[in-house]
Image 1: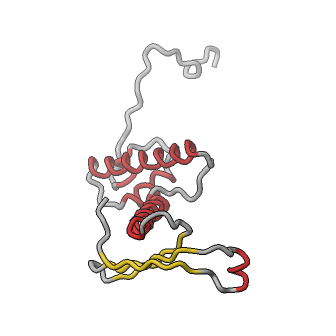
Image 2: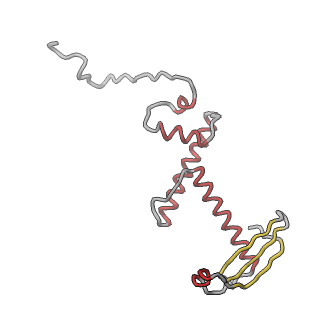
Image 3: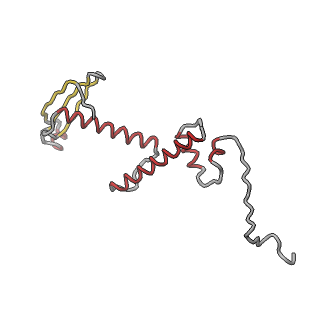
Length: 163
């Protein structure tokens, strides 16, 4: 993990609003961090007084990356809510969604499709039960599927005696 570099201000504060003070009467730690690289100032509130201020800023920065990851998941993997709440259920649903995303990305590359991954996922979701070759879903080409000849299977309805 690369370290943050910049100015750090560390303060102990109390909430002063009537309802805020009633809801959280304990002291809080306010860590203000100025990032010289991006020329941005970040302010973090925590109740952890044991960690150094730079570590607090690092943790919040990492947390933001996790938030961005979940935002990406919602936008690209089409997970709107989790079906289970256990760690295993969430991990399983995320891995399945990532696997689908990677398979569609491979499909896009192998078939040289110009469509976005989102469009491909949309088309696949509405045609999941249709027996159409994947390439045909995304092109105007009309493939003729040959019906297989089943020589070793009896046909019950073609020749009915007495008619």
